[in-house]
Length: 463
Image (cartoon, rainbow, N blue to C red; front, side, top):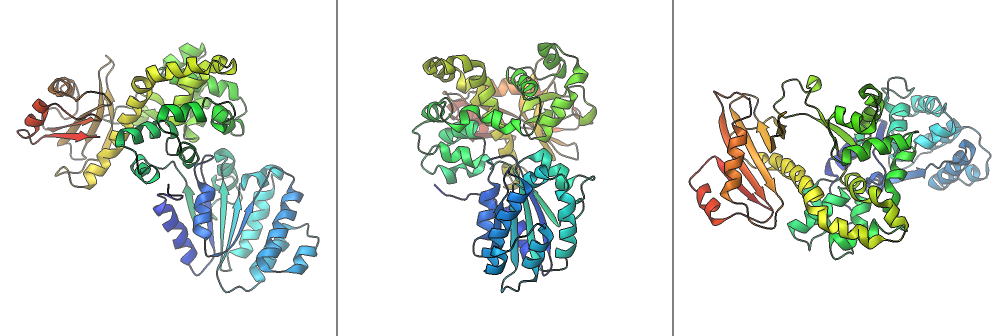
């Protein structure tokens, strides 16, 4: 297993900042376990860097620990023995000490410094005003998204406008999973992605298991595993009313995607949900989705709320509703439910997301003689839905697609059904050219394969 996969763009950004002959100030943030520390470690390898991990201890304890590391970094025994009660003195000492290489300072979990002392962003702003005239690179790294944005990026922060670059680190895309699990089939990779969702820590945890079900039993249902209660860990420091947020997420996981249905299931007014939905969207847990053909997505009344995070979606569908069984040592009952429902109620939906991601790759490979501007789902108020729809800016080409994570090959009946649904899509009906793409994990029938040779507007993608 490779220890470091993807992140080429993020590393390129950091290297570009490092190459500047002036000071650099980078804000790097993202959800927990997404690989921020690994990215920093990879970047500073071979560089003259000071890496400091802040803790939830007092400001004085953090400052003293930073002083100890700075003394080692500068090989300065006087600093090590000195009593320093001012952050500015420490950074002045670092900046004024000549070194052969450009200095890199990484302050990981930066938000804890601001939590220990709410004035710390102002303190660091004054420090940066001096550092910006030197040749130092500073990386502020943090995993509490709300705190990091408040302390470093938002308009009200003393550090607003000071950064020279920012990186919001996301989960690793599915296309890189072969690098993590080189011996597994595409079907197995999709199964693993459907649970681990591109989070490096989860990917690593699942590496030694023989199949997805063993991985779930060993690493999620096992009460000694950190994944057993991972959602609580992720949310407890981001929000205060964790029970209310859990209720919202669980309701959506149960299939209530419309605002009215979410409110109805929770027996609350729709307006009272705005804060929770907005926060969960900001935390990259939820997204508001509209049919891809909508002209004004923000004002669309067809908006649906969807859980973006694969692991959280799985946990709230299969673990949270069965906590009573798990706490009563009835793990096998829960595993039986998972084995019965995982493919149809979870993996099949994640497969659709993978297919929509793959559309961009296919476009980049020149699969069609036009470029589309948007890819997404389509649905109407009568319950009809199309897994993949892509449209171009000129309004001349539209692609319709279906995605099937089935045991059996997909037949011509699926294409016929797709064509009937495509006729319902009200997008440039008179002037458009229609294209079709079918995705199938188990291949296609001979009849359908023969048809694709006769139709230039049909594409079959296996896997």
